[in-house]
Image (tube, rainbow, N blue to C red; front, top):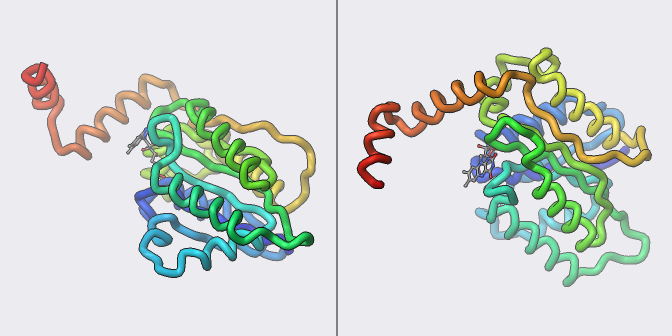
Length: 224
Ligand SMILES: Cc1cc2nc3c(=O)[nH]c(=O)nc-3n(C[C@H](O)[C@H](O)[C@H](O)COP(=O)(O)O)c2cc1C
């Protein structure tokens, strides 16, 4: 049975799109073939016994980092976790016969284009090589806020989210060890016209910021 550890690297913890996507992949995995573990960087930060999680990670067949895109890169809290894990591996070199885990990433971003995650996926590939693990591939998913908000009401198997479902299916097949072939990064997003996404996103952020469109333009104007 393959062991997989999912790392939720979102500073939002359990209320994140990253967590929602991890849950979906875990649901899709065959429990006869995969034993899943889950860690959250937010929780790890609060822990005293931080090394325990690192010891668990190095016994895995695969590690899946799921996180949001921050400024075309990686949230600093996750970066800190990654540096600490690397230091742990240097301090505690593995014996000759230990496993070399495969590494995957699921990155979601705010803008609609999933391809905006390309730089962050490359960072993850470089990181995997640096720590001596095997980089497999990643999935870059656009419209993360939309995915989070509609996780339970619009199923991944719907036409709108078909590209994401397909990407996650490729990931689960790979995790279950059914594919050894080379796989490039998968860039995907909900299939909707950009103008509809932009209008809905603008409404969403005005609501989140608790400000009207009129008040927002007035404020920007007076700052200028
Ligand atoms: C500090 C910060 C920086 C961000 N930078 C980007 C970015 O460069 N590109 C982008 O498309 N979205 C960006 N976003 C939006 C997040 O990637 C997006 O909201 C994502 O869906 C959050 O995922 P989560 O719920 O898993 O944390 C940023 C958000 C924050 C808070």
